[in-house]
Length: 68
Image (cartoon, rainbow, N blue to C red; front, side, top):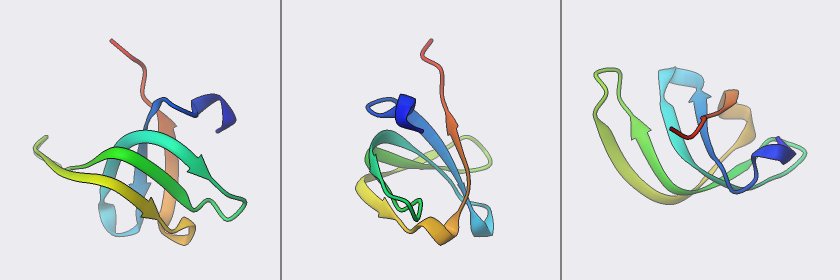
């Protein structure tokens, strides 16, 4: 994940939520800080969340998103 600092990542969370945002920090428990975060709904719509902290035990997948 170190290579993804300052880049956009997609988090897949327990319960089926997908969160996309700029990776600012994480710790050994996979607690993640995202800036400009948004929830990506299954139909493609998004909901702005701003700067958030996601608790590591809710994270299933962290995936880098390539820039167009």
